[in-house]
Length: 414
Image (cartoon, rainbow, N blue to C red; front, top):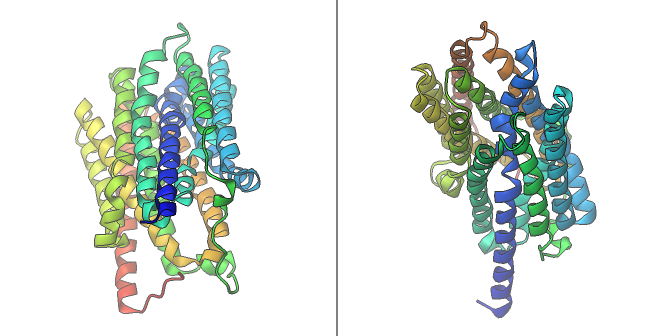
């Protein structure tokens, strides 16, 4: 290996480690918002508890709405400035959410979570930045290191909730959202040390040729199936994940036990990413998506079998793994439906539609859990009765599509 190649890899390692550290810290804001967003909303609402998960919906809307501005900002100013700005947005969101709790203002709390979500839109770009700053031979490791930071975020976020939720007692959870300010500011300090040149954000020249319209691209059967599987995996995960803390507390478990359940879930979402790529390479995208949908079905069966603590936790772990296989596999399927010249517009519209659907699912989660006269057990069961047929129908559509493709001739766009 040449001296230049060695220097390039060393620089890529430093960049990946820095971004992984930021993922562990700034990325921990998402588990904080998700694990107690619904519970906080429940306590803020005096009458109609069905809107309790609206703040978590606000978080997801923030991710969806923030995706395009985040990309535009980083394209104009570079990723370092963009990521630092995103961490500051996260800190501001924590302050607004804490103020909403202290003032007992439900709408302000929901706005705070939407702002945290906007900061998380930048976090979604971390793994791409690490890959873009790396030579081809190191790209897979760079992505894995950043995803490894997500595993630490899954530990840090819930532990912060447990340690700080009563910091401003008698106002519950306000202290936890004050800690989000700290996460954002520490993230600023970490991300300010990034050394990669901003020009690495510019991808290779786009492929020559006429770009197809979005309508033409979206009309492809493979695109439709990939999009359906991605949205199904993510929306069903959001539906159960958002309602789980409410259901657990409603079934008599402590806030700490509910928070730890979310911690296990988020770890299960990220940890498989270290080998999901290898599984896709070995068994194929469609097989991994099918495995993810099957795991989601098993998740609902476990959840419907009872409401003991181990059943909640095991269902949440299966939910995370099922999401990982289903969503990553579907995303890989999607990339074969468009060319390099078409990727920006397709990915932007895809993410906007995806997170919009996820936001709706999180809102419906609160309605469902509270729709049975306050019976958390019945509400939790209904969430899983929704998941079971939806995942099964999606699996059938995927299988039929695979059969159809094998009978015909599939030519990927790139």
